Length: 284
Length: 310
Image 1 (cartoon, each protein chain N blue to C red):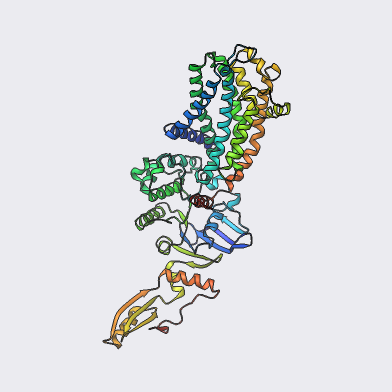
Image 2: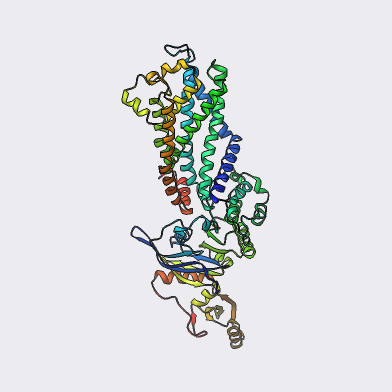
């Protein structure tokens, strides 16, 4: 039995266990519902608006974009927060003590955050299906495309979450280096509205990141052909989108692996004890 | 002990900036031994243990743990050692049973016919005495229960070498006693080699076969609690009051001295007390000697040392 593969399998069981335990926790339930309802509220505000040149309503067009935003946000900020927190509180260290425990830990962390999308997506998609006519596709073929795009988007984003989580010194820095950039990226990537008003160089910048491409692919999956008028250049660029996401997942893995290893190496009982003492000391 | 040492350290040095924490530590731990590393705060006990665990890179020195330099050791090596960590708030939502089983499962590929890994989760829960707490959320455990969990996690992979850093810090006397029983059960059962740090002298005396005193970045004493006590002073002190004066006499043979004393003075001897040199005396003498940069006070010919104080 290959011990590394074995550890990754244990990690999957770990991620599932943490997800199931989390589902029973009011804290996690509250987070899922709050997040989901927030997104629905945003769509509700523009329920009567129509996309120019089409008969599509704005919630219809905005739903796949917002879904992409939620996914990228969760997959980046979730693991980043968890890494920053769990290396201080000794969670990571515990796993690291076991042979290939770091492999298992990271696998579990990844799976937990991927699974964490599901409850939010259920609230957002379920709510949209009820509130906005035709916003949620019923054709299974469209769902196959959507799920494929989501998996690619997850693989492209997850390494970034590990990178941010490994680099920050303190958990508060995840807000600065993870959350704020993602919100800014969401604005320039057209998650909250059209990109037409943006400067050309900002639009180009947005297209360097995975968020734009995940949103693009999800709009393709969710919307009728007529919606293409809302896209940059008025065309679907599926091949480019898929390529961009794959490139991100490949090049992201290298720094993620190196940085996580470096971070894990620095953890020890004394480091955890120091963090504990600092946490107890509010005034410095 | 004639077996190959499980831990062998030669001239270990550790420097943080301009601060020399370890200045040439030599130590050996043999298979099946329980060794206590004792020393004042800041002496470098934790640093030493973390270097042996492979978590810190020493500034210099030869380190061999289970035949390997911990810095380059692989995961198969990690499977052979156990570390008892102090839990804080990790895995708050897990139950001890789930966590022990989960962490234990990593060791399965490293099981050998001679050493089956991991240990059975139920057996470990029994061994550490977690009992009903095994199915509570870890969040709700008491401090003592947490430390049992820490030990359970430390031993679930059936380690050949177990590290414990200040295992009973913050324990009440009851919890401390129970923890000591647990360590005895462990070492009896598995023949596990144990290296523990503590600044509790009675703990070192109760648990360790051999004590190493670390002071000023060096091992300043090495031996069993008894042997160390013998090194610094005659093995017993006889104290009494004679005509209102408090007398103290150090001797190797307290019985003979007391017999002689009472023979010479049929009356007038009161408050007779025979006291063996404690490990605490030993320890303080070693640390003080180190700080004052002098030799430890060794016994002169027995029965000749007579200190009389008011």
